[in-house]
Image (cartoon, rainbow, N blue to C red; front, top):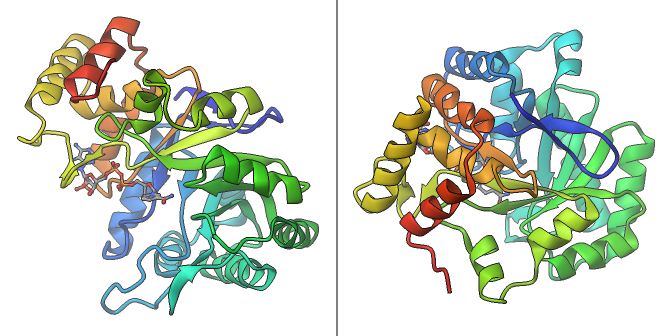
Length: 304
Ligand SMILES: NC(=O)c1ccc[n+]([C@@H]2O[C@H](COP(=O)([O-])OP(=O)(O)OC[C@H]3O[C@@H](n4cnc5c(N)ncnc54)[C@H](OP(=O)(O)O)[C@@H]3O)[C@@H](O)[C@H]2O)c1
C-alpha cells in the first residue's frame, strides 16, 4: 500500500488506517479476521479512542473497544512493535463535556495504555477542541507522557487552523496530525476552499506538514453513500470508474481522498474484512484530475 508522510519529521504511515470505533460488538474471531485483513493489505496503523464502545451493552464504559482489540489479538511484543497504535482522549462522558486539563489527559492516556495492554502509545490525539483549554497545560501533559515513554507523538482531531495554532503555541512537541471529517459526501474542507470560505485548514496542513486523517471516509447523510439510493449520481460515477480500474466502488471513494495532494490518510471504519480489503485497494489507484472533479460534482458538491 502507498505510504504517506506522517507529520513533518520524515515518519510515514499507510495511506489507509483501520478505525476501531465499531468493533464493540465484534467477537474475538471477527476482530482477529479484521486485523489480519488489514495487515495483509499493508495497514499497520490502528485508530482508537477512549470513548469507542462507551455505552455498549455489557461493555466496560470507556476504553471498551481498546480493551476488545487487545484481548482479541493478544499481540506479542514483536508484533506490537510492528504497528502504530493511535488513540484519542479529551471527551468527558459523565457529565458530558471536553477536558484538556493535565489531569484528564494523563489519566485517560494511562487508562488507554492499560486497556490496549501496551507500554506506549505511538500517537495520542485530543479528540475534540475544549473551549476551556489552556495550551501550556496540554504542553505539560504531553511533556510528562513523552518523558515517561508512554506516548511517542501527538496530534489533534476536529480542530480548526486557529485551534491548532493556539495549542501549538503552548506545546513543544510538534502536532503531527489533525483527524477531521472528510468524504465525497462530506467535502466541506475542499468545497469551502473553492468559495473562498473556511479557514484554509487543508492549505495550512500542507504548508506545515500536518497529516490530515479523514474520518468516516465513506459516510454521507444517513450512513454510507456506497450503494445508497440517496446518492444515485455518485454511485453511477463510482461504479463507472471502478469498472474501468477493476476495483470496487468503495476503493474509488478512498482513492478520491488519497488523490488529494495534501496526502491525507483515510481512516476506514468497516468491521467486515472483505469490505476492508476492497476499500483499502483505493490507496493504490491514482485518479486523474478529471475523475477527481467528476466524482466531486457527482456527489452534489458545488463548483462556483
Ligand atoms: N475523530 C473523530 O471525531 C472521529 C469520528 C468518527 C470516526 N472516527 C474514526 O474514523 C473511523 C471510520 O469511521 P466510520 O466507521 O464512520 O467510517 P466509514 O469507513 O466511512 O464507514 C464504515 C461504515 O460503513 C459501512 N459500509 C457499508 N458498505 C461498506 C463498504 N462497501 N465498504 C466499507 N464500509 C461499508 C460499514 O459497515 P460494515 O462494517 O458492514 O462494512 C461501517 O458501518 C472510525 O473507526 C474511527 O476510528 C473518528
